[in-house]
Length: 234
Image (cartoon, rainbow, N blue to C red; front, side, top):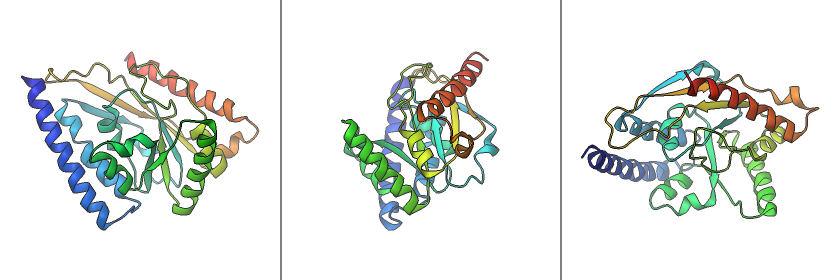
């Protein structure tokens, strides 16, 4: 009964946010703060899921100039959890298929997020260079899930190098974001406990100019894995 009620409420709210967001973004087409506004609305779903979110070191997100935020990607609940910390002048980078999701896909594109084609290495390389040019032109920050897909586990999948290629070629610092295990969320349980979001210190790319792309990728993966091991066992 709780699950059914929760699904109905979330579905109605989600559709409302999508419709409202579409009209809003048509008026303020691809405004730099559209994604932040929509994200704040979507983050309210976490309350409907019976989740309390605790954010540690939030100050590391504030007053950042253009940067690349990276976060672990577990499941669909990420949409409603990590959305609470999206900053102004920030968009997300997602796979092209997202724009074909009814209502949400239109909203995703209209709000100014960036979609990339990932089918071949040629398309991936080409799209990353387009993303770099897009970031320079719009002077924005980006949020990327470097695993490239949902892990459906509290353990991270190996990182792809795309986010780090963008950071290196744009001289953008990297801000790692760790989200504790969300795979125990149950729709039929009223209280789903506390989810921890921990912001790690930013990595200044200029300090790693002598390191290869894969080395930077491995360094960030290790940092995030170590922190996730701590917060998931706390």
